[in-house]
Amino acid sequence: MSVLRVAVAQVNTLVGDLEGNTELIAAAIDRASSADADVVVLPELAVTGYPVEDLVLKPGFVRASRAAVEKVAAGTGACVAIVGFADGDGDDVWNSLAVCAHGRIAGVYHKRYLPNYDVFDEMRTYRTGDQPHELYEIAGVAVGVSICEDAWIPDGPVTQLARGGARVVININGSPFRVGKDPVREQVLRDRISEGGVPIVYANLVGGQDELVFDGGSMVLDGRGEVIARAPRFVEDFMIVDVSAPPNETIEAYPMVSLTPARPAPRSGLEPRIVDELDPRAELWQALVLGTRDYVHKNGFEDVCLGMSGGIDSSLVAVLAADALGPENVHGVLMPSRFSSDHSVSDAEILCSNLGVEARTVPIEPAHAAFLEMLAPSFADHPADVTEENVQSRIRGVVLMALANKFGWLVLTTGNKSELAVGYSTLYGDTAGAYASIKDVWKTTVYDLCRWRNDLAGREIVPESVLTKTPSAELRPDQRDDQSLPPYDVLDPILIEYVENDRTVGEIIARDIAPPDEVRRVCRLVDIAEYKRRQSPLGARVSAKAFGRDRRVPLTNHFRG
Image (cartoon, rainbow, N blue to C red; front, side, top):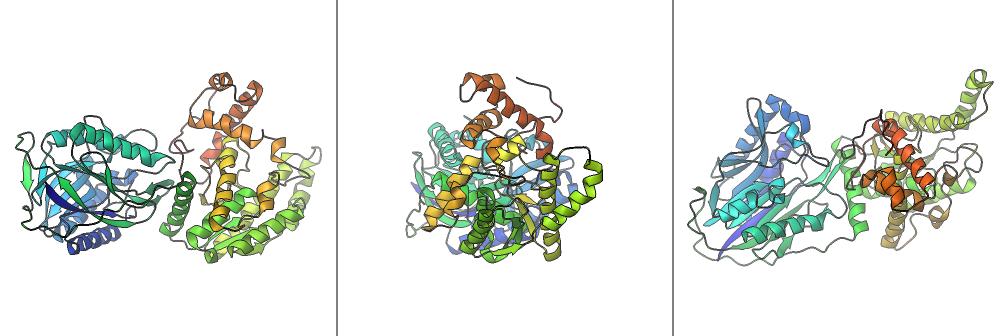
């Protein structure tokens, strides 16, 4: 058995920051060289950041990407670097990796399978790689290289490389998070190993990019499919692993580029490192925290503000923001109206105190009264209805945006996925803001996360009164959510079937999870709220089907299946 010492650099890149990303890569190469690694592996499109989307339609950007990877290559020595970048030739662009060593690019691989489902639409921007496979002799070991989706294909590139002589296959990734994704990835790698019988090095990106969150979790599996090393998730990491590779075979299938010869002397062994699996609520929490932190910081902000109503949703967003940014950078804005209950104000104040965040009170009654007086002549012959309720929410949106403009803050909205689904929100009111941290979190999960976070802290951060009170928008006297919507433990199962599982109304009724009329009403609310969702801010995608990238339905739509 030969031993290949592999360094996996799980880095958090920034889309478009070619200079900054290149510095990250160069630092990883230096660190790997100092650790006597034979090869250092960076994630998919590490040079450009991922996903690049339509930036790769700019020829100048693609040229700059190529120049950046050439600069990386110029700084390499005997430690081989596997680096993702965007490669182009005229109008053709490929999602690519470069194999760099001894101051040059020794080879380039173009991704062969382009995902075109869920959040992916790579066929829109990239060409499919079709060049012949090559192997690279690194420390005497025949190594094959591949990119992300290539590993998900049965008998695809990873298996072909193994059967063609590769003794280790390296797979670089930009695999976004969703709840339950990590075991699926591991099983995919095991499936490829069962086909090819050689170890796989899986390097994944970490960090938030707009609505996507990349959770890392890079891993190395041996030729039996056992995980011999695993990096932590949701944080940057640098992992060094000794991978035992079977002897090279003389197979004529693919040519081999010789980079570094076998090492003549053994090195001191490394203890494998395997981090513990995360509880589903822990991984969801870390994803929401990372998505919020990176959206704020990568867009040049330090502080955020949000409306504090004393309700469960704003409480959750405040705790997430404090974890993500530090409590000193979170500003809770209490905006009581004539309908706000005393306990709502006190609950919000207690939460802010528990977190150590600023609690700023801006009563909206003067503005509310002025609006009603201003509109009175126009509304004279019409009874009060939801219009007057929505005015309050829109005033609050104006207050938050004014504070954000004045102090250079970013506004976090506090709506959850259940409300977003059925349109239980005010357009240009509580939907006004820059980032919606929990827009992909169902209401019932909001409660679970708050209780979990309290348990984790070993103390009451979210007050028990917030967890037990009846949800209310408090826009009219004695208002409760269940006056407009089914109870959330009834609503969420319907929404999950309609939104995430793509079942028709008839199919949901057949599953007998709620009365037929309730199912029809809820699904109709989802359909007619699409125009609101198109105008709502983005937020962290954490489910298998989030509103936005994942779920794209027409606004003008008369299907009532």
